[in-house]
Length: 449
Image (tube, rainbow, N blue to C red; front, side, top):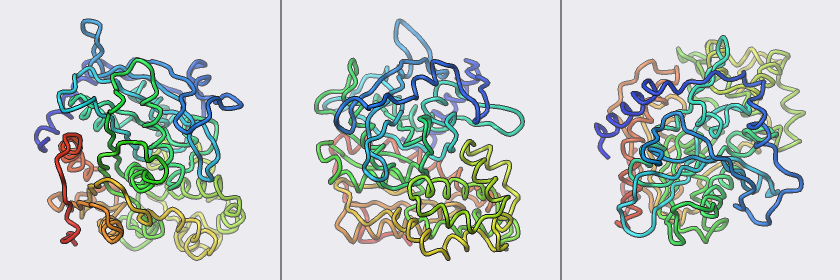
């Protein structure tokens, strides 16, 4: 799908949103949704089933961006799912997500394919779960608590080509636990087990031989990349044809001092740009998964830092972004140093972050890495290093560096957001080529610098 075709599709989605009026006001992230919605997200105890990917429960729901014509829902019939997965320590957990059954017929070879989509950063509040936002379109509470499910864009592009899609909520997002944001192990499990669960759902058009692909951008790029390299050992039975990943935060130690995280809008550390609130997600995730992290976090953060951490646990990303975008992370530390410096100078926290490094395993199927030189949150060197790591291990990798996007408002995260457009433009065609068994050789012999 060419860039112009992608933009036309995105325009259609926007027009549908305005025409259908699919906007619903929801409670703030600290509150709850309707009683039925809350009940769905509470896992049974003990968990039923015995294997990762076993379906626990389902719940059909109408998509705001949809039309009902001749008993067919366009572009898809959606259902929330809860399924078994494994957490960061391989313990059985319940994870929720969304399955989309396309109305468009599959015209390619073989059975209808499935893409397991890894969502970008939504937040840590339970109301930020993609499976909830897909049904609301817009979540708002005065003054800054606003969130929309932007993953509708890649999902609808795939549905328009007859590809089924499943989107995981990840561990602890929606369900009653702390979402372990950017945890390599649990995110990779959740993405792969969502595909297993989708194949077990009754009444879908997926067949016994339906091929699979993985896709994701930003946090989703990290989760998708983790799933891609874990699949040969964790889910070898899945017929994975390829993975399309964008803006992959493959090394969190390298991400922390990025311009929009600490160096600031003006590059001098005085103002920390929009992403300073993400520190709250990082430390909440570490503390939730690794008990040894909590004393270190308490030691380096002051009262203001502890308030940020508490707010992050119940906030969606746009809310956290807007409330903290002009603050320096030095406001949150007892020493007055940048929070990134304190974290990286802690041997315990640094080692825990290093455990999340992606690129130490080998994907068994081809991988396409989308990167942009104007990405001001996850820089191109991250993608270049990941591609090199995978190439060195013998994987088939295609690294595409986009360098035609103007550097608008660099340091505000705009470059990261607009770099999703070339990702969307290239994603569908590359995945469809994998489903058509068209060979790809990658460009390991000449990776772009």
